[in-house]
Structure formats: C-alpha cells, structure tokens
Image 1: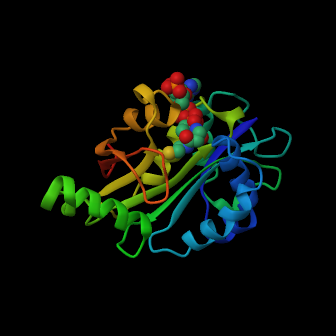
Image 2: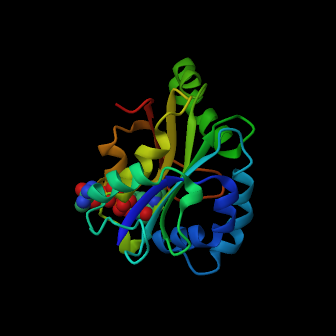
Length: 217
Ligand SMILES: CC(C)(COP(=O)(O)OP(=O)(O)OC[C@H]1O[C@@H](n2cnc3c(N)ncnc32)[C@H](O)[C@@H]1OP(=O)(O)O)[C@@H](O)C(=O)NCCC(=O)NCCS
C-alpha cells in the first residue's frame, strides 16, 4: 500500500465528496447521516475566496506506478509527493483516508464574526491585527484506521505551504490536558493559544482557538 498526499481541486473533491465526508464522520465519531447535512456546507465552502484542500490516498500496490510499498507514512510521503503532484493523476482505486481544507478568513463568515468579536474583547487592537489576514483551517480528519502514521502532519504541512496569508487560525474542542491527536498535532506544529474555553453561539462545548504565523519553518 502506498500513500499519496496531494492538493485536491474543487471539481475532483466534488466527485469524491461523500468519501471525504465518510472520513470526517468516522474520525469525529458522529452518527451516520451527518454527512448529508454537511455536504451542502462543504460544497459552499469550496466557493469561498482562497479555498484550498489537500487529501491523502491509500493506493493498492497492484497498479503501475504504485511502487511505494510501506506502511511508514513519512517514507511513502516523499515518493508520493514527488511522483504525483498532479491531482488529476489520482488513480481510480485510490482510497481517500484523509482530508484537510480551509479558506481565507473574512468578516462575511459566521466563524470569523464569532471569533473576531471575542478576540477584540480579550486582546484589543492586537486581536484585530491577528484577524486581519489569516487562513481558516476549517477541517482536518484522518480515517481512524490510518491515524497515528504521520498523515495528519503531512496534510497540514501541505495545506499550509505556499499560502499568501500571514497567519493560520483554527478552532478545536477543549479536551482534558490537551490529550488527543488533534491537540498534539497542532502543538507539535507550533500552534499557540488565541482564545481558550470559548463558546460558539449554539454549541455547548468549550473550544480553543489556536493560531500560528505563516509560512511554516
Ligand atoms: C487529528 C488528526 C487529523 C491527526 O491525524 P493523524 O494522522 O492521526 O496525525 P499524525 O499521525 O500526524 O500524528 C499522530 C501520531 O502519529 C505519530 N507520528 C507522526 N508521524 C509519524 C510517522 N511518520 N510514523 C509513525 N508515527 C508518526 C505522532 O507522534 C502522533 O502520535 P501521538 O498521537 O501519540 O502524538 C486525526 O487523528 C483525526 O482525524 N482525529 C479525529 C478528528 C479530529 O480530531 N479532527 C480535528 C478536529 S479540530
């Protein structure tokens, strides 16, 4: 089995949208059926300024060109990235196991308005500056069977490479001691606190908003 991590243009993601949503639903342990309510939202996000997505695929070793026979994602990544930068080359048999996307943050969006007003309240003018030019990392998910092999890190690195924005922001649920893979991934990649124990309107969970400057080192 080899691994391909590639930018995925909107027309290709549209054809594989339910595959990507299945990864999302299983990674988040949401009940089946949630994908139907999320599909229109993900499709609308694809139309936003600066939208960009990256996907990870497992490719069976049987076909020509599928030469990377390893379970070590880091090793596979180098070969796959070099060999298959062109998303149109994604083989039919490739199984989508990871998805990450985001877009240019702007006050027109619900997430931005919620976070902007909280950041302004807590950090004043510095908070306004934080929100002036950023990429919102909206979703990042890896299928449970493929987690813990470096795919999340590869998706994030690829997604954030070469962006025009000077900063990336995201929100993630608070968990005790920051003990889950999402938190560990974000901390490992240099994300710092912007807001803690923040409540989005209509959601009873506590969230953290994290951010870091771009480009990545
Ligand atoms: C968060 C998430 C996207 C991270 O993806 P991932 O592929 O599991 O992340 P990584 O593999 O890069 O890192 C996870 C682990 O693999 C280890 N790892 C990293 N590179 C590795 C490699 N090349 N080989 C083996 N292991 C590696 C890391 O040490 C890390 O271990 P840890 O979890 O004990 O800290 C994924 O776990 C997920 O989908 N979680 C559920 C959904 C979710 O929380 N999404 C984010 C919502 S905000």
